[in-house]
Length: 268
Image 1: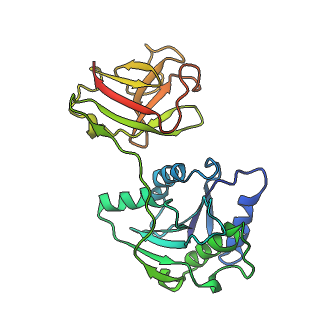
Image 2: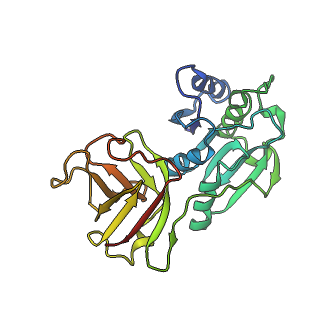
């Protein structure tokens, strides 16, 4: 059984995402396809990095992840496939694998890459505007059907990488980062990890600053009884990162954070 995931910025109204299913089933009819997300903000390669890296590695070893967030579709940008640890990825070479490759570096995983320059593994007619259907999904299907990575294209060693989120410790001990992602509840996932503020008096002796608001201390979970609905709280998200949330509410009533906004944690 082969698992193939799909991540795109297509949305679901037009049906373009389901066409990828059809292109895959035509080559690998026994594949198990999972729609990881089709709601990436259009052309937002950075957001796609977060979503894929936060989800892909929960799938079984050998899973093929097809990513189509491709503002350069039809241009000279390369199409690539990669093995990152024990998972496979098919994507445009535009930096969308940067977070997964950073994870590989941190974990000591091996990687390999190919330039998808063998049209025999694409659909017969390749359009300039739908490489997801005509190139990426078919290649993912061939991988899932047992074609080796090396047979799909020419070996390469220089995938494009893009700058990613990080945290910075300052001379006064404070740590600053940025908002990475806003989820459907309006929660702000921020680029600060627990070990990066371990030198501060977490949880009760810190304050978290974001969007002109200050949160005193951190909580363990949503809905802690002493906090009223729509009160700003800070806690650790399931992704491992710092989360700023409006308790038991939907974001935007207190602050309206955006990706890239600065967040700071310091001693009270």
